[in-house]
Image (cartoon, rainbow, N blue to C red; front, side, top):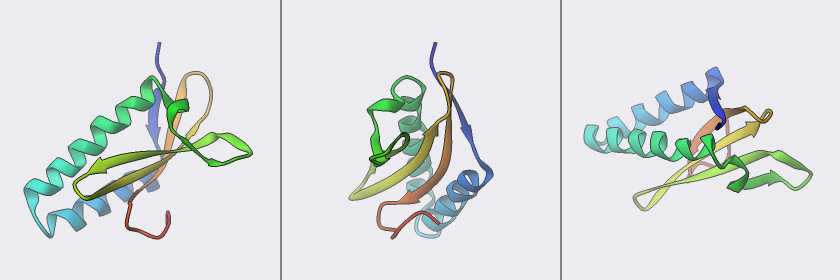
Length: 99
């Protein structure tokens, strides 16, 4: 049995902002970007511990790097227990940090 993935409201807001920014440039690219994010987050259902740690002293706070084009995205998430992963934020790799 895998992990359930849950999103906090701010992570959903991040996804909406990322889509809005991408759609301003090109609708098809925006759709492909969201598909790439969705497909990549599926890895958290089985292998959340395979992602890189954010802090050396907290093995449960991790980042998933999502390739897309010349850059990509980064999803910040926390492993809550043996059954649940919570996505806390999603940002473009060119952003300075999570907001």
